[in-house]
Image 1 (spheres, one colour):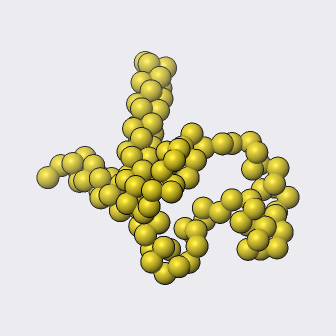
Image 2: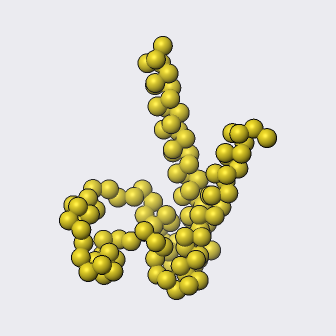
Length: 111
């Protein structure tokens, strides 16, 4: 099996496993997935908001907030898991497209 085929199989496995970040905290009643805290949640957990984080928090808004679609948050874990998988697929497509564009630009510049 070619290395590139193994790579894409690995990416596909990671995409399918991406909802584990929702399922495991839900199963253990642990709250949010680790590291996906909002500024308000960090304030509640840590008691303060780091100065740099408060400055940067308004700089970027995710194209798909919470990795889900509007109105799907109330539909349950199965809908959220499906939305996570769709978000992962879209993320892979965007990263591959940007990488190919940069590669073509650098290849032309290197000639």
